[in-house]
Image 1: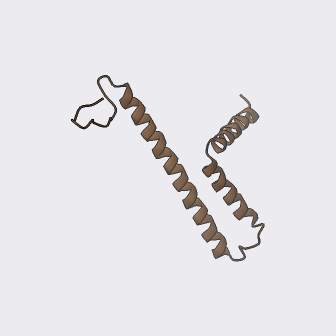
Image 2: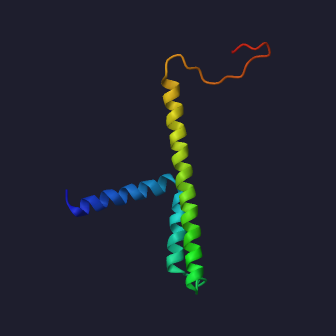
Image 3: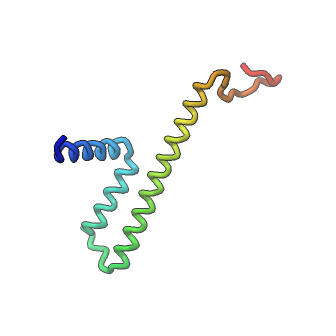
Length: 98
């Protein structure tokens, strides 16, 4: 496998992740906007640092939310596959399950 093939695989993985998660894509685009400073609002190093820290925190929050949801989905699937496990159902008025 050549270096360019590895790069292509990594690029595809990144593009797929961004396609699957619009919130992550928005965070990455926000970071790109910070580095480009096209609005010319970041004139001091402190302003740029604050913007970067805020963007990284937001990205971290998005990633952790996605990670937690993935873990919860996996745990729910594994629980459903256990023999004798019944998912939560509302009881009828007399206390029996439907």
